[in-house]
Image 1 (cartoon, protein in one colour):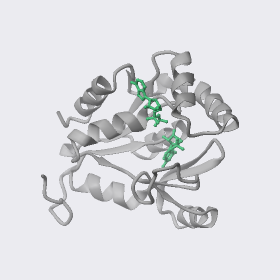
Image 2 (image 1 turned 90 degrees about the vertical axis):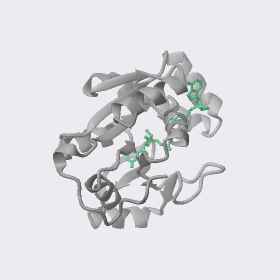
Image 3 (image 1 turned 30 degrees about the vertical axis):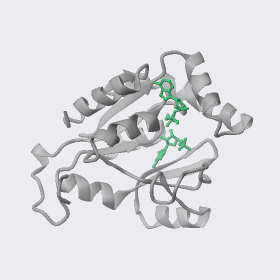
Image 4 (image 1 turned 180 degrees about the vertical axis):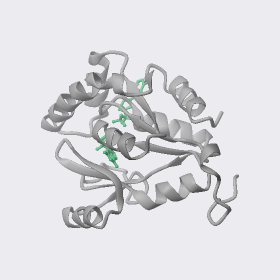
Length: 197
Ligand code: ADP
Ligand code: 5GP
């Protein structure tokens, strides 16, 4: 188990692992891949976003997300505490800035799992970030996964599928595409891209 790096000497910028951004349409399997990867490599640090979305069954404050009110989100934005934020399918999501910068400073691999708008904002503010797009094997499979997850009402699924069409059309903006046919394979490929393997 790696000792905590907090408080150690900052790593020079040229040898720091790059910030990696994982994006892709809702239901493609981002959370599943990341959970699988972190089970075997807990040293990969995943940013916990703030969101105004309500928790799904089993989701815990501070684990999957920091679940915040609209007012709290307004404050985080106004105080410049978010590295980026975006509205997605009716809710706001944002990446707490300080924790990400601290981890990069001490040389830990950092992963953000965020939407297309957020990925574009990160690219603008951190040119060295690598952007990875997770694609479904097919449109029908994406619909099956999103519907099969059973966590969203039909109208929310419709909004997410509309957003998915826009996200899929932006694949070429990313540095790398990984097709999520096998969770194990994609997790391994992602680790290699992050230089953890
Ligand atoms: P996202 O985080 O991208 O919204 P999830 O990780 O919640 O997506 O996955 C959506 C659904 O698809 C879940 O039910 C998950 O178990 C399933 N899933 C994820 N990856 C695969 C895969 N490679 N093959 C089959 N089903 C998958
Ligand atoms: P979900 O509600 O399914 O957890 O997430 C919906 C979408 O919001 C996903 O595409 C997810 O990657 C994205 N998302 C999660 N956190 C953030 C964030 O901090 N910023 C941005 N821009 N998108 C996020």
